[in-house]
Amino acid sequence: MLRDIPLPYPPQKTGPILGHTVHNNYMSASPCKKYILLLLACVLTFLTACGEKEESHRKLIMVTNATFPPYEFYQGSEIVGIDADMVREIASRNNLELIIEDMAFDSVIAAVQTGKADVAASGITVTEDRKKQIDFTSSYVKADQVIIVREGSDITGADALKGRRIGVQHGTTGDTYVTTNIGEPERFQDGALAVASLATGKIDAVVLDSAPAQEHVARNAGLLILPTSLASEEYAMAIRKNRPELLLLFNKTLMEMQLDGTMAAITAKYQGKDKTETATQTSGFKTWLAHSFEINFVKDSRWKYLLNGFLVTIEISFCAVLMGLGIGFLVAVIRSTHDQTGRHKVLNILCHLYLTVVRGTPVVVQLLIIYFVIFAAVDVSKVLVAIVAFGVNSGAYVAEIIRSGIMAVDRGQMEAGRSLGLSYGATMRSVILPQAFKNVLPALGNEFIVLLKETSVCGYIALQDLTKGGDIIRSQTYDAFLPLIAVALIYLIVVVCLSQLLKKLETRLKKNER
Ligand code: ARG
Image (cartoon, rainbow, N blue to C red; front, top):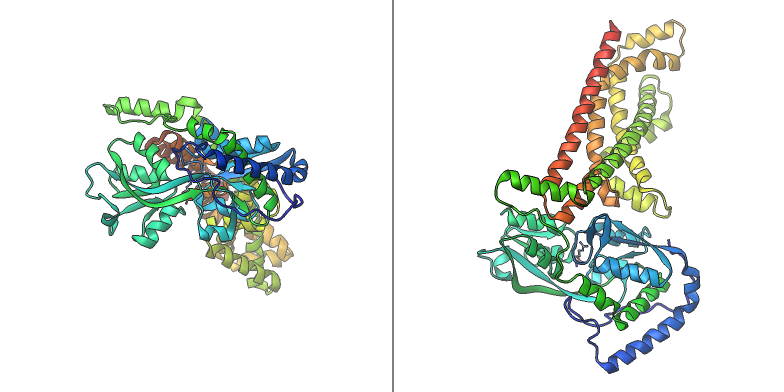
């Protein structure tokens, strides 16, 4: 990652390079303005020259939320779009190796703010609130918040939105606009899901940025965009505060790209082109299903997203279960030893604290805290972060399950063990714990099943697990139905297999009893 590049000069104030709409030609500046910009670019080039040497062969991590065509979306397994291509160009012009990470939109600014990424390019609107968290580059495009409705809807303007069910993408300016001016919206993980809900009549309107709105409407028959715009906005890229050298590098390159026509070329490349195929409702269920199956899974080997995601899910769940079991056993033994003998007072307090905190907070919040706060400064693998988060979380539940199992073993068993001359530890190991384990096996099995399904929130830290795999397919095909059903089916199959396995283990243990 790019870090600590010496500052050649004070931070550059941000502001739009030029006011443009998505459809404008970026080279439409007057000749005089062009010369001023050219001059500015030269000055910036000169000023950044010394800093640049140090940046060669460095990594540039960009975060985005690739559900936002034409700015960022998947094409095959690659994230493309206006933002992605612009940052690719910026990276290549500055000799930087670009890594693009896809995450929930409401996490991209946090990722930059906490130093997990160098830049967020995600159709981000410049707002005063966001400026407090991060710095913005010069803005490179103008956009509007528009309203999408079903054809024939009685909503014909902004006034008619009051009291209606409005869908937005969570954490966007559309969300903020509706929340402050109209009322509580229905918040979706991405725009495509909101639009799918609108198309199926579950909500009455969607408030979304103009360019993605056009893409969605083009793919969903029976929808239209109202001519009223709710707000005019400008997009810019977000860079961590106190990194003026990087901000300057971006501003300089953006300006160069504007002057030499690269920006216009990138924008033109993504305008009006049909980039994905929709699983349209062709006549007949069978034909539709075959068509939909082909597009969602066969085309471009999209099934690989599910397979790879499945492997990640299994890897995380398996390792987290082992870690949870380890922590759980330890905590349970400490707690029950304390209960029975009064030993390990301090450890018992610590265990109590751990149980209270872990069981009192949602796992997704714990995952985000571990990723963004605890591992903030370390460049650690996300799979490892997930294993730690789910392992620590599961450990708390496993601990209580095992403790209840230990408590359920007749007190006489301990006494019998001790009177045979066994130490407390030896009695625990060879008499109590095996019986306790047998008692709690069904509850433990249940905990593993819960854990496996809980890992579906991994997408929050840009991990491509099974659920995220389905999301990526959805964002490419604009089909909510089949990818979600496929993901659900895979989880279901794994859970059923796991339950059968546990059943077998239980009967085996019972047989041994006799
Ligand atoms: N422009 C809006 C905002 O900044 C929406 C951006 C959504 N971007 C995305 N890649 N999903 O809040």
